[in-house]
Amino acid sequence: MVRPITPSEHLQRAAAQAIRAEIIQWRPVSGGFSSAGLWVISTAGGVRRFLKAATTDDNARFLRDEVLVYEQLDEPFMPELEAWVDDGDRPFLIIEDLSDRHWPPPWSIRDIDAVQAVCSAIAATPPPSGLGDEARTALARNFWPKIAADPAAIEALGVASPVWLEAALPRIIEVEREARVTGEALVHADIRSDNLCVGDRVKVIDWNWAFVGNPMIDVVAWLPSLYLEGGPAPWDLVVGEAPLVARIAGYFLLHATLPRNPDVRPDIRRFQRSQGVVALQWLAHELGLGPVAA
Image 1 (cartoon, rainbow, N blue to C red):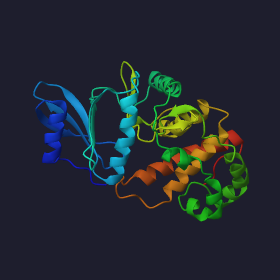
Image 2: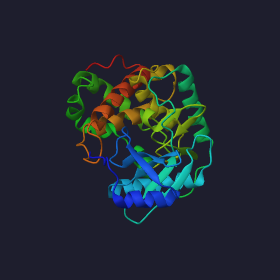
Image 3: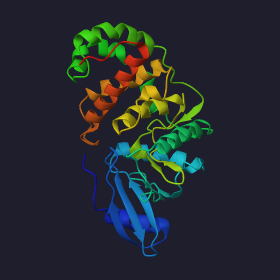
Image 4: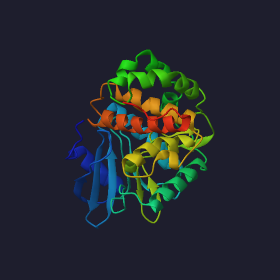
């Protein structure tokens, strides 16, 4: 993944015109997994904003999906949209700068409680119109039958032994079929530390995967990464969601076996594997399958 450090002259001019102010500094921002250009821009008047610019056709499409949410929702967990410019090729959006807030990790109990409350607030928010269904469609699949058809790919990840997998697969496949992805709630579909910050209130960014469905997806998909960042074990926070845990575990593990998209950060597959390991441990705990033997 190559993320631009210096904005193009065209982007510099368009951004200054969009906010009607002289921009005196463009500070590149690290983090996240995409190749979209990310900067904190500062004006001569001392005001800072965050700018996200498309660099490929894919993240141009993602930005157009994301702005649908920014333009229609005015909720406490939403950053303020400052500007949106779409030239039909490489759009960009500008939102309030949140860099001075706390971006976990580390996590405190208060932070975890606040994010859980925000997940509930998102679920209670009427979904905006025009949301895509790419994420919902991806999660609507049963992943474990495909894993069972080629268990060597998962075994090669070193997450479970052939003996453990052979014994556990029939039960996991059965449980995953019960996973409910559909629903009527707004789902962010990418709750994770690099997409949220904590201050006087939690702010959630990166809304391009948002869809209408089962709101527990946000919580179940978030908890493995929380655990990897020093948080509590997922099974200490949520119980009774084995079908959805099976679906999320299958999603992470199967994706960890795929070639990396060059437009995505190189460590994405390793991160998906790590999340899949935690989700599989969670599933084994829920189903009484015993420790996952690698």
